[in-house]
Length: 312
Image 1 (cartoon, helix red, strand yellow):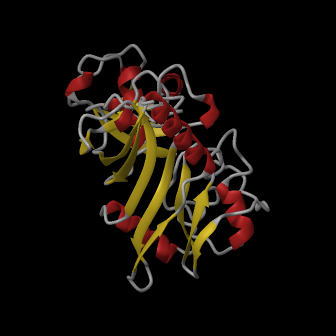
Image 2 (cartoon, rainbow, N blue to C red):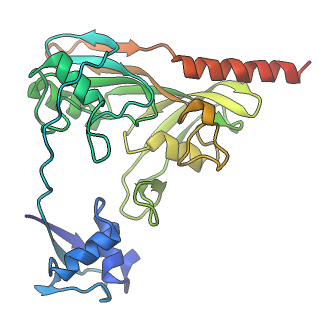
């Protein structure tokens, strides 16, 4: 059983208890909070709260969360990996679009972790448990590109500290809708869970985390822009949400883009192209770059051809 203490802020003054608690607990839905309340697992001042109770700024809410049901250990699968760097401490893989990074409900096999277990055997860090061995950071299922994997806990802790200190280089390239006002700039906007859809993120001041994305326009095309993006922080869906916030969502993004999706892309046109870090063992700086995948180059070629024909 896990115990969490939540402090009610001004934004939830006089809100229903189930709504306030669900918005403060990132991974629990409103209906899930209501179930917890039925079992007296949500309390204020030692007394159980019901869903219709009202909360006030400054209230301390105690939530007892049941331990998650154990998942079976991920199994090795003989899935080819595009490895761009490997040594005794880590490896960097070029993940294809459409591959999930680690097992989760609905995706228990054919993930990057299943492939890593086959390739590395027991040589993966155990910090993130049996479902996410070696995974230091993630990229979305429909984002392609470079991902670093730790082979031992020493490397994992060192690389995670670099990410936390913002000394870890992560550059992406994308095609986004429209033409940006400036050739380069920075989006500094906090990200949190969407209040109506907890699978989505949004720019919000409520229960959010600081997020910074730097962008540079590489090429303007007919109705689109080809851009480079550098992460200063690494929040869930950060690039996709920040670009949509600017009014220039990533092409093919079915979650944050326009309703009429470019289905031929099979997801967002976003590629993690460059990764740079100090090696955890000897401190030398390593920077790796992967070529744009075929889906990306084909889309660029199409847009360039359309742009050229419009000027003829």
